[in-house]
Image (cartoon, rainbow, N blue to C red; front, top):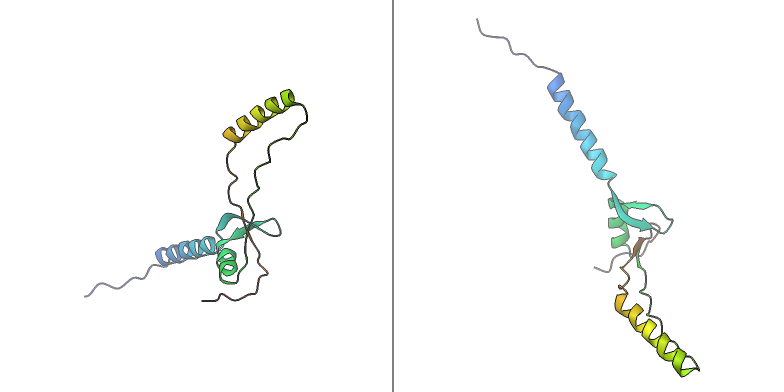
Length: 108
């Protein structure tokens, strides 16, 4: 007299498939950080490089020195041009590269 239990296959299958897709996409998530070889690093590569001293920071470029000329009239004009360039210049952004082959362990 009791109702029979029914187990449906499709809701569980759809949930498992969605979980696998989310896990795969999460593991393969790419960052905007470049590797030494020129490709884009994944989050896993970034974490491994951080723990094994594999992050490389590009150095900032020093601003150009003021021009030195012999002619005082040309020197004043060149210095004015240099001052305007310095006022409009933006500092370079930090660039980080990932060395995926780094093997030095983290000191902590």
